[in-house]
Amino acid sequence: MGRLIPHRIAWRVATVREVVVESPRARTLVLEVPDWPGHRAGQHVDVRLTAEDGYQAQRSYSIASAPELDTLELTVELVDDGEVSPYLVQELRAGDVFEVRGPVGGHFSWAVADGGPLLLVGGGSGLVPLMSMLRHRGARASAVEAHVLASARSEQDALYRDELQGLEPRAGLSVAWTFTRTPPPGWSGYARRVDAAMLADVAPGPGERPLIFVCGPTPFVEAVADLLVDAGHDPRSIHAERFGPTGG
Amino acid sequence: MPPISRGFHGRRRDDADAGRIPPGQYLTPDFPVLSAGPTPHTPLEEWSLTIHGAVDEPVSWSWEEFRALPAQTFTVDIHCVTKWSKLDTTWTGVSVDTLLADVTTEAEFLTAWSDGDYTTNLPLEDVSDGRAWVVYEYGGEPLDPEHGGPARLLVPHLYFWKSAKWLRGLALTTEDEPGFWEAAGYNNYGDPWREQRYWGD
Image 1 (tube, rainbow over the protein chains, first blue to last red):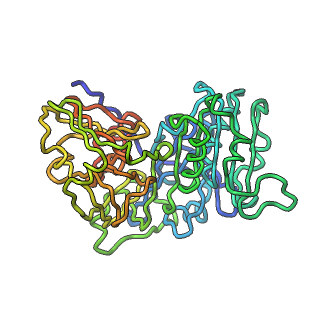
Image 2: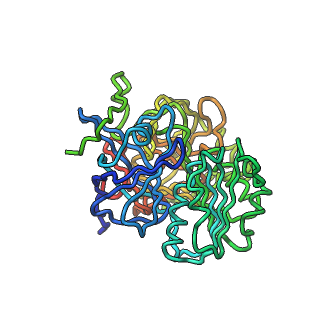
Image 3: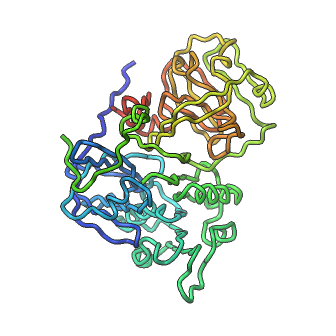
């Protein structure tokens, strides 16, 4: 039948160039990965750690960086009783090495050629793959209309807040935050869980046929995707990525 | 030889369960959710399950007819390609053998398809001989929509994406046709014990 046998996706050694503090619980790992094959914004990688006695653990993490960057960046949030994230967030430092494999996951991904308008809805660290899309849009100076709704418990927990503020090109870009637990003092923006009214405020209407990407913890994604379907958006236009309650 | 990650010790499993966890997997007590789109909510009166494609006669069951079929309750381990494994999960449903009992076919493969346009392909052999079910209860309760209710395929010996949620049909095929994830870089077969996660594994 002449079925194509594709290449195995190889494990590659990643060297940590820098660890950036994003929030008290999240770090961006800036990695040098020789022969990285490139990725589409929104994809993820598998990470494999090896202990001195040969014990290994694997997890998946979303790529935060634009495909145009020469380093690969992962933003990792601490899972309290996790096995891998405490190491990546609290122990890892410049010069350390581990393995990555990827990129993986072509469904939850976007490139400027795919067009828009874009609706990006992120809960907590669900913002990470959406940030890769926005950075890609910026790197290509694309004017594709993009609307971002980011949900965080507090300002302290919010990822990339300053960078989102300064994103270019401004034309066609809107960024809205909602702080669900502790809004900053004097905050006049949203301070509740994402609901139908909030989505109606920030999202293009179903008639504009936006490409929609929703990422976050499972209950967040379930709720937002249901609201979008109820609002009349085509279920096939809604790309969802759910972070399980465990992992780590 | 993989490089050593300085300062990483990890959590080894020395208990009896270690032999039940495939390579690269970790154990979770929770039941994470992985789906590519919104959760469909098909009313039961509109639900049906159909076996069609390369068959002499397609067969179809309404929800009531499906629920009247002989069911089994069984306990298995499940393994998701996103690395979690969950042991001793208990399900109730209809063996695919029961569904295929009156089907005459030359097919060697099938595509399971679902509400929400999801598809996944399997060798017919892998859903035969008591290795696959269409389940509607998890832990004695009706299956939650986010976990694939009202009914999902369950093929516990393969990675969990093969266990299509919101199942509506099995299309029998003479040629193997890659499904949703299989066309997007995931392994065509997906054996967790051989760590067949992606193309070429």
